Length: 174
Image 1 (cartoon, rainbow, N blue to C red):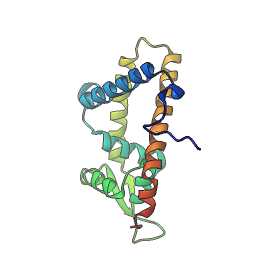
Image 2 (cartoon, helix red, strand yellow; image 1 turned 30 degrees about the vertical axis):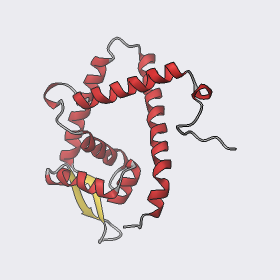
Image 3 (cartoon, helix red, strand yellow; image 1 turned 180 degrees about the vertical axis):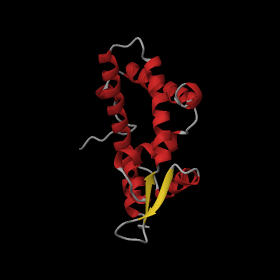
């Protein structure tokens, strides 16, 4: 019988229940504190860009211009969510909508120069916050934390994709 992670799994196989309780508690505390402060940065830029906008702008900067479907897929969210989140970014001039070079009917989203400038301001502010929060950490501790947090986020993303897989596959393409 194959083993799959589910709620009925014997936690003694996975690890120390006390340690796992501490881990889940600390993740919950982190999520609450991150939402309260929005880990927005420091100074005047603090809390000046919401998480959704930051993640969308960051993705467009890292991966370049793309359509709504591609952006949604790369972020692991629904196209309608991307459309809703991108609208104010277009309205404020941070993102440009352009025609696809090969298919003029399709729309491509692109980070505008203003959007790139604004994103860099926020990144700088957030880097400063991370430096302040980890000022007494060694470079190795920062690297370890980044590696483990990245690994944790990848595992969460993979779990979410696996759970959403059958639903996403049954949805008609739009």
